[in-house]
Image (cartoon, rainbow, N blue to C red; front, side, top):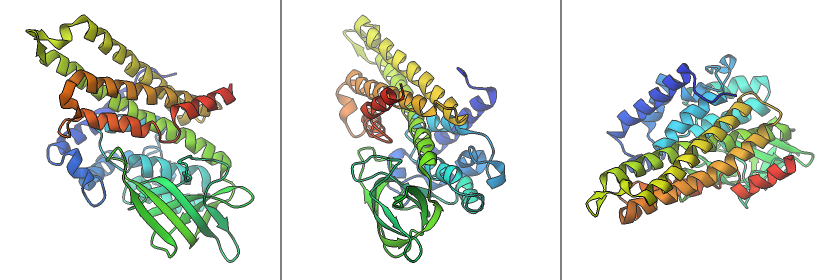
Length: 366
């Protein structure tokens, strides 16, 4: 079990952090969200071209860097700390890992290089109308009457409105499959969905007898692993966001004075901040444990993922809410970033299963 980053992983984190900080001076978060893609394309090009963040967990034989999912966790934690909007989660994790875990060698060789380079943005249509990422069925059905076609809809599709590569999870009648669909094909409708967290680019994708290519018609086991990978990846965003929310709160309490002394000197506030520190540190530990399990494809990776997602979701929500409280009235204004972390906390708490859903999975596993 790893409880500290290696020297290489520390350097990776520093490189991502430095690149984001330099770019933040020329294009802030709100401006990035307002762009056509919904994220800073120049920053994404730098992250993928200079650091290779999208290639980290892709094997070298498919154009990747050949590292692993733990290195992806390191990158996501840094992006979560700055609330940087990017297709890292939707494309480099979800889409790339869907192809890697479910598709055959020929399809991997065809699809993964573009995803690894970051020049192709992928999206996975998976969640049903209730917003659940099921691994046994879904709201999309696949028919093979005269070539595969898909009919149905998926919600909460990350980067779904603007993706270059569209993947879909569909019920084949005899199981669940993974399919590739041309986003420009007839019968495909993509509708952006406004999110509480403006940095998450979500969409609803509808298929009306849309032509599709089967990457796998028996993807149940691959989707179970993918669900664990996705849930753990979200915890990295949560840990990074919680750490920054805590750091900014501590800085505010040290600078803000009341009754002639810094707010941070009051014992009651010290106790509250100490509790937040415990929440952040335990969240990081359990998030890393989940990443360690998924990176090594361990037998208990689904259990570790559920433990991490349940704990980190509630920890981030607690830290973000306390950050707003301890900042006072300024924290609920549009100009202050505290409200952005609160929105990120509540939004990510729902992605790939809420805390109570993961606790139910934990009970089943035990």
